[in-house]
View 1 (cartoon, rainbow, N blue to C red):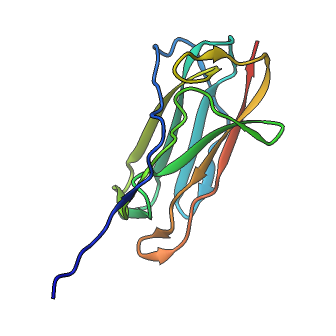
View 2: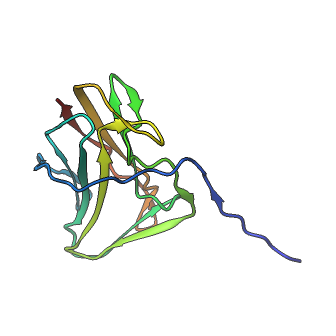
Length: 162
């Protein structure tokens, strides 16, 4: 008997990564969970159409290694919102491979992810977003921690486009 394993890939228009990060990053106190310190740094202000970078990190403050398992290749889902409406800023991931993935963090180490975004929407000709305050939400895709059911808290920060 032949067994076939299928891996599904959600297909969407690819995210576009444009420009360098030139804005200083603002941050606040990290979120703690079971010996893990979760932090999100975003610029406080950007101009309409400007490219910028956000930095998401998980620091393992435990004395042993940690394995975070996700049902997708992505560790997190990133969205930008205004009044609870998702705004598709350039660079926000639109697709993620559906494959169980382990993300290992050694004791005392930090797992980091950097994402380049742009305060613009539209494809293939992005247009600057209107001025205002937006919320960057990072939602954990973690389904287990060291083989036990569990997740990490979602984290969000505001960014002002002016």
